[in-house]
Amino acid sequence: MKLTAEREKLLTPLQAVIGVVERRQTMPVLANVLLSVRDGRLSITATDLEVELVAATEVTVQVAGDITVPGRKFLDILRALPERAAVALTVEGEKVVLKAGRSRFSLASLPAGEFPVIDDINAQQSVQIPRKELLRLLEKTHFSMAQQDVRYYLNGMLLEIDGVSLRVVATDGHRLALCETVLSVRANAAQQVIVPRKGVLELQRVLTEDGTAEVAIGTNHVRAQIGDVRFTSKLIDGRFPEYSRVIPAAANHAIRADRDTLRLALQRTAILSNEKYRGIRMTVKANALTVQAHNPEQEEAEEEIEVSYQGGDLEVGFNVNYLLDALAAIDGQEVEIGLTDSNSSCLIRSPGNSTARYVVMPMRL
Image 1 (tube, rainbow, N blue to C red):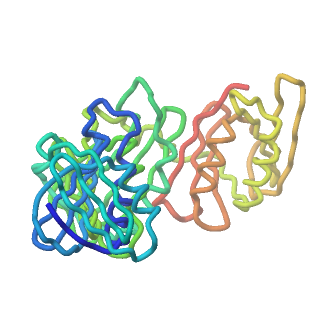
Image 2 (cartoon, helix red, strand yellow):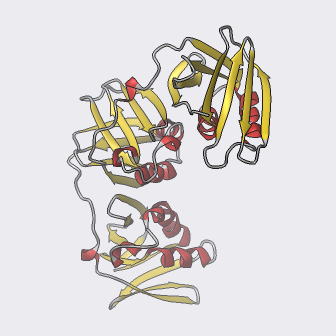
C-alpha cells in the first residue's frame, strides 16, 4: 500500500472515527484503525466490536491495499505535523512508514485480516431524516439513558418507527425523556430497536454537518450514512419498558413558569441540597412556587418565584438534577409542569409542544 495526501485529508476522517478506539482493549488489533486504499479513496475504520465508524477521503494512490496502524499514535503524529503538509504513507514489511518533509515515522502494524469489520447488516428498512433533526432528537433525550444499570436494556435509547414518525425514548427508571419527529417519507413498517449508550453518543458526535442522514435498521444492527462517515452499532437485545404507561395522561395541576427563572432558582437552591440524593421540595400554591433544600449539616435554602397556577396547595419532592436536565432541553421561554398529586410523576414540556416530553419520578423527603 502506498499513498500521498495533504495532512488535513488524513486528519479529518481519522478524527471522525477515533472516538470509538478504546484506550484499553480486549484484543490488540482494536487499538488500531484499518486503512483501506482503493480507486483514489482511503477509508479509515475504527471499532470496539459494539460500534463501528468508517470515514472516507480522496487521496493519491500509488499502490492499493489494506493495513492497520495504531489509531491514537497515528492521530498524534498528524496533529503534530505542520498545516497542509504533504504526507506519504508506505507499507514496508511489517511497518507503516509516514513521511512529511524532513519527518519520518515508522509505525508497527497488524494484518488487515485480523481487523473485525461489519459488512452487511441485513437492513429491514431505511429512513431518511435531516441530520440536524436527528441530532435534535438525540440531544433532547440522551441524558436520561442509564449508565451501567443491571437492567441492560436501559443502558441505551429506544428508536421507534411507527410509519409516519420517528420517536426516541430514554429512561434510567427514575426519569424519562421522549422526543419525536414526523418523517418526510412514510416508513415501510413499525419497528422498535434499542441502540446502546456508546452508539448514541458517537452518533451524536458525528452528526455535525447539514444534509440528510440515511438510517438503516437491521435485526442486530443500526447503520447511518452521514456524508463521508458511516456509523454502525450493534443493538441491545431486550424489551424496552412500555414507556407510554409512565407518561401522565392528564395532570390535574398545571404550573407555567419562565424557564430561566425556574432554572436559576433550582440551581441556587441545589447548592445546599444533599450531595448524594440531590432532593429538593417544591411547594405550589396560587401563582407562587417555593423551592426548598436542606442537607445533613442542617443547612437550608429556600426560594420563591412567581408562576401561573390556579389550584389547591401541593407539595412534592424531586431530584433537582433531573429537573435541571429537562429544563435545559426545553425550547422556548416558558415551561409547563404537570402534577397529579404529591406521590405522582411530573410531566415537563414546552406549552403547546408535545414533540418533546420529560417525566420525573417523585422523591420521598
